[in-house]
Length: 255
Image (cartoon, rainbow, N blue to C red; front, top):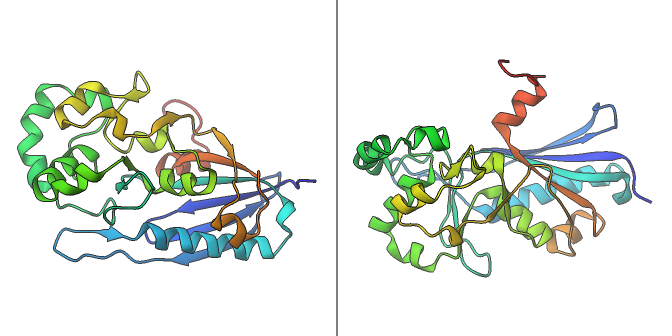
């Protein structure tokens, strides 16, 4: 019989934080694991997705060991925004994760700025052109590492990739997708015109879902290492910034 505790995972930039909560929202237990960013060149900020997943697995295992595997009702996530991973059809990262601190595409931002503003893309995706978003990063890779784009099956965020590893389902929630610069906010779908400017096919992006989307935990390395039961409901969640606002009680328009 499944318990009533919530196991929450925050995928941060420099660490993951794990919390166990009861039905009243009281924090019962917390664990944390740190992981590094690397800067092999000036303006680069890279991370190893596998290292992030390994640290999450270790922290979750620590939490599970304080209770029993069947104490938990759900496993839920939130994530740092503006992460970019290029993966092949087997899900292998073709290049390290680019996090929000990576500014290598500053030149592309300058080159694209005029066209971006002329098309009024800000009024479609709600974001100014910046190095944290997918559009200039795609142009940087096309210019500097075209073989990566050629070999790419999907471009995903870190939470997309981790949840695919846990559930076998590859989706990006709307909250996380809004941090890519490719999402049309009013239509809640990948924006065809912005993708056309990027010369980037929509097929190389994951399908979209609500943050409330649920899929069962599959028999996987993560499941076996943590001891969590197969079929535990996994909730997609969203970006850490929006969720921090919800956590502060900002539920109404204007707050």
